[in-house]
Length: 95
Image 1 (cartoon, rainbow, N blue to C red):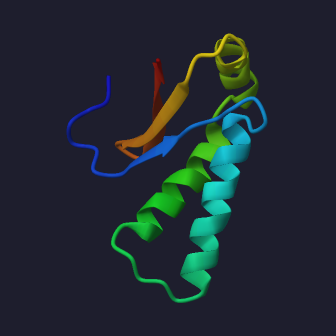
Image 2: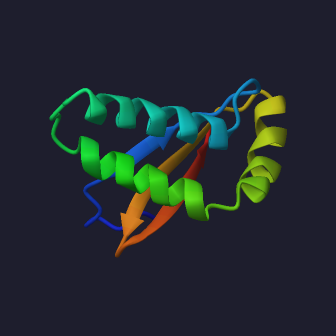
């Protein structure tokens, strides 16, 4: 369950072609590119920093182990990454 006090939330939707790590890396790189271009969108720096910390700390082998069978079975998998007092956490939703 996500804490209600977490204002920065990032939705990552892996698929059979792109695992959650790849999707997170693409979002991080997009955020960095925008920041380097001088983009000043609200929350962009916080989102990019959260993705950086998530990429450094997440056990992607475990996340793939969980998500890939679901995706192969035709299910939609969504990871919502959020900040929990300085620690990146995630919530997994399957539909």
